[in-house]
Amino acid sequence: MTMHDAAKMLPARVAVLTVSDRCSRGEAADTSGPALVAMARERLGADVVATACVADEVEAIGAQLRMWACEAPAPDLVLTTGGTGLAPRDVTPEATAAVLERRHEGLLELARRRCYKKTPRTYLSRGEAGTLARTLIINLPGSQRGATEMLEALLDILPHAIETLRGDVQDDGRGEVVRHER
Ligand SMILES: Nc1ncnc2c1ncn2[C@@H]1O[C@H](COP(=O)(O)OP(=O)(O)OP(=O)(O)O)[C@@H](O)[C@H]1O
Ligand SMILES: Nc1nc2c(c(=O)[nH]1)N[C@H]1C(S)=C(S)[C@@H](COP(=O)(O)O)O[C@H]1N2
Image (cartoon, rainbow, N blue to C red; front, side, top):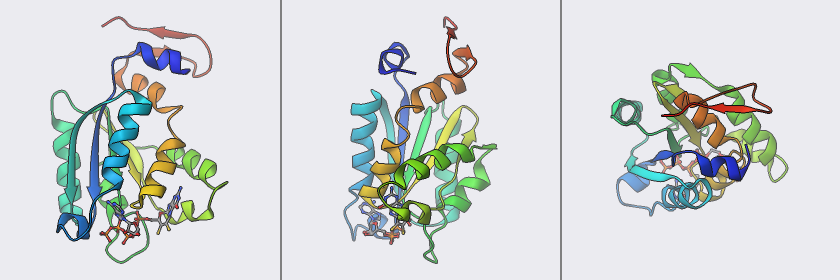
């Protein structure tokens, strides 16, 4: 999908969840969440419909993801930032896997592959991606640099992923796209 095609679709509804013990306690400033919000608005033309910050707790992360995906209308895309590494309290991938109905390993496989050109550290992030109802959830790293690099690596395919999840298009993934009128 080209930028021209992306402009034809209804704006993506995006929510951003920051997962950080320190940010949730007010001991550190959350810069990654706001950076993702700005990228979603400026680069995806998205409506950012919700943001939240929770501690690195499986229950809190899962509850927020479920709540957003059950809303009507639900966000098309939820980006999480933080808690994806190997530190003992990093549980975002486990919390996300527990709520996903369909896993989508390829999305982050592509992001890691692209980011690897800059740093092999991209493979330290254990993030998950997949769908819950009509919402695509993607785990991104906690550092602002890691989070924005990973999102940057997915920007070109996200509009088409969202359109497909909405059921707005039928195509063979490469060429002609048939759009359904709403
Ligand atoms: N929301 C955030 N905004 C800015 N920087 C962050 C954020 N979350 C983490 N970082 C930074 O990312 C790096 C990785 O930190 P760490 O793995 O401890 O983060 P985390 O597990 O995602 O969050 P926390 O430790 O606060 O629960 C650190 O430099 C940390 O300061
Ligand atoms: N693209 C990219 N991905 C990245 C990084 C980075 O600098 N660039 N940092 C990594 C590092 S150092 C860690 S520890 C993991 C996990 O981060 P988290 O626990 O804050 O989610 O994300 C990784 N992913």
